[in-house]
Image (cartoon, rainbow, N blue to C red):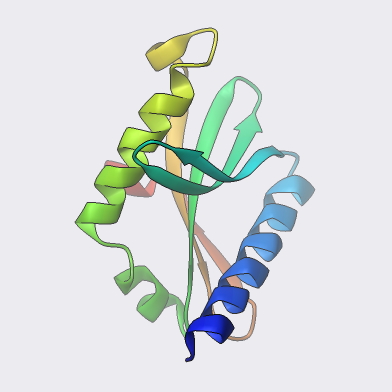
Length: 117
């Protein structure tokens, strides 16, 4: 896939995932939030819990999952820590890391609390 097509497919996947979270009653409060360590695709709130969401798009969910590297996970953790520093409870804020896999048919698979494994 060309760079531009890949970029736009990624944006479309993020939009789909944001709509999915919104429809399930979770407020998407940030898109492409950028901290000094890097970017977090989506940040949502479910009551007091903050959900950091990494969106991966590929032809299949399995291939999309393979695109998440340990280096990316470390970057997301660091950025999330920076985001939480601005919350009233700081690092004690209830939070989790989801990975949203989007295949070429636009089907979404959410791996809740994916970084805990």
